[in-house]
Length: 97
Image (cartoon, rainbow, N blue to C red):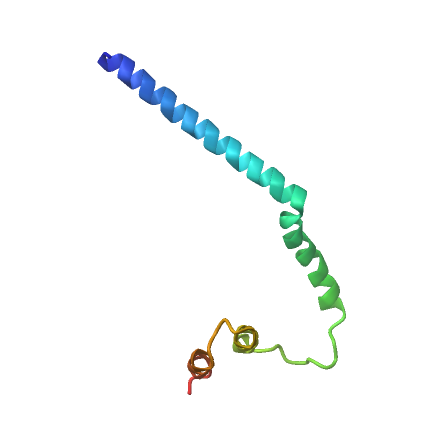
């Protein structure tokens, strides 16, 4: 195969790989839309103004970020995914003890 033919074949191969990747991305986006995976993010944004409009009187101050992390770790510990020692070590790290 000559030099020009090799370059043309390389360009054609590159173009075909790009088209295949684009087609796969479009298909993935279509499935996400169909399954509602993308709508979850839209719903969250719509719900936030409603929550901001009516703040609950019980939680005047926002919860610190480490509290959510500790709750998540406690759930993992209860499920048996994280051992008690790992949980305690991470808790000390989060609390700065």
